[in-house]
Image 1 (cartoon, rainbow, N blue to C red):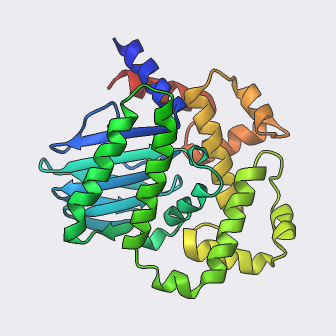
Image 2: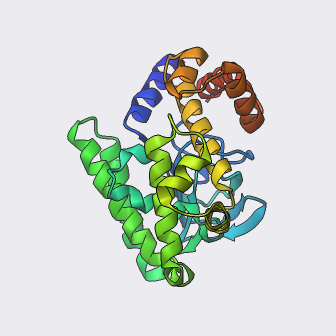
Length: 286
C-alpha cells in the first residue's frame, strides 16, 4: 500500500505539479509538512478559501483568514498552522511546467514582502472555482490534462497578479525587467555557469546594481539565489530520480563531489544521501 502511494506521488511529480486539497485543516493527500519549519524545492501557492491560522514566512508572522493567498518561492523558510475550519488548496509546481512566456509569472513569487495577498470578498468564490477546476484536471489521468494544467496555472497566476499591489513594482519597472532577465539566465545556464561574472557580463550590469535589485526583491544576493536554485534542482533529483550522487554531480556540472556535498549539507542540514533517505521515509510514513 505504501509503495503504491509512493509510486503514485512520483507519477504526479513527473507531471511537475502536485495539488493538495485542505479539508477541515488537513491535507487530503500525502503532504503533511506545513506545521514544521521548512522550505520547498517547488514554487507553491497556498489558497485559503475559509478558516484561519498562522503562517510564518522568513520570521514574519501572518494571521490569516478566508480569502488569503500566499506565494512561496522555493527558498522561503516558512511554517503554516491550519485551524480545523480551514478549507483550501496548496499548489506545488516546478517552474519548468510553464513555457518561456508563461514562466514570467513566477516573478510574482520572488517579491518576499508581497508573499501575502488578501483577495476581495467578491472574488473569493470565483477564485475558488478556478482552484477546483485545476484540481479536477490534476486528478484526470490523460495526456491532454498536462496542457490544460499548464494553461490553468498560468491563468491563475495572471489573476493573482491582479490582486497584488504592484504600485511600487510598476514604479521600478526597469528593476523588474532586470530581475526577469537574471532569473531567465539562471534557469537556462545554471548547469554550466556557476560564476556571477557570466551573468553580469550577459546582462551588461554592475555587480552592485544586480545585488541591490536581487536583495530588494528576493532577500537574497545573486550568488545565493543561483546557489539555492542549483541545490534545489539537486534535491529534486535526489527525491524523484534514481541517479546516484556522483551522477547528479555530473549532471549539474560540479567539478568536485566534495564541494557539492559540503554546499548541500550547509543548505539542507543533511548530506545528499541522508536527504534522499529521509524524503522517502517521510513519504512512506504518511
